[in-house]
Length: 314
Ligand SMILES: Nc1nc2c(ncn2[C@@H]2O[C@H](COP(=O)(O)OP(=O)(O)O)[C@@H](O)[C@H]2O)c(=O)[nH]1
Ligand SMILES: [Mg+2]
Image (cartoon, rainbow, N blue to C red; front, side, top):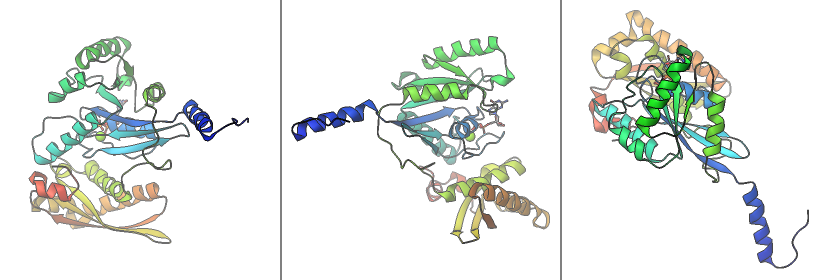
């Protein structure tokens, strides 16, 4: 390599030119859409890790969850968000504020739509979405359940409705079309230095994922109000030599829900505990000792101050 002769100035110019020629890309790529569209499934696919919990029940995702993909040349910070709905109680209000935040700070927006969701009703967000000046990709999901004619029909409908220039049909579940989407996302990523350490996978603490894994088991096994009335908080997380010792509290809104959750002779809670432990052992790649407790936090879901304590937004 030849170094430029002459003063410091010239050297500086040549350095920055070199830097520019291998510019680093980074940005926030936020996935939004209706409940059950497959946002969390897609996010896990894109990141290649089981970060977001997935369930056929709606309103599984309550927070904004980031998943970071790093290579030498770029850093993509994906966000999974709660499904867009018309909020009916304080927790849902907070869930929608995560969505609004994700719309306003995106470098690239992925509007994920279930191919069978003809109305794709985004409530008050449709207009701001149409007007916002960042690259938007319509992502038509679950095409494994559909055909070409429907893909074309829905693509046109979405372009019109949200002012999109492009729609990419995928099946997040069967990993079809996801590579095409990834490639397009990288093209649209702005030139920028990385936002997080290049070995980071998420900006969320480990405790958060532990809480989500426990909540996932509750979503799977309980019906009606119970999954929507629980909040899980890790009280102790000790990474010991041979195992990780975790103690967590499951908060419910009413006394009756406590009984349902614990079940006959404790069988319900035991099942949640055993399954959550196995899931955590896989995630942490270490033996886990898990203690679970159930407590009543009267009507927490409707109280702003409680929501703040649990890490939601007002
Ligand atoms: N058939 C089919 N099902 C999917 C696809 N993507 C997601 N699902 C299912 O749709 C349901 C909701 O998925 P989830 O990712 O939790 O949706 P979210 O509420 O938007 O986060 C789950 O049962 C997924 O397995 C897909 O491409 N095809
Ligand atoms: Mg979700």
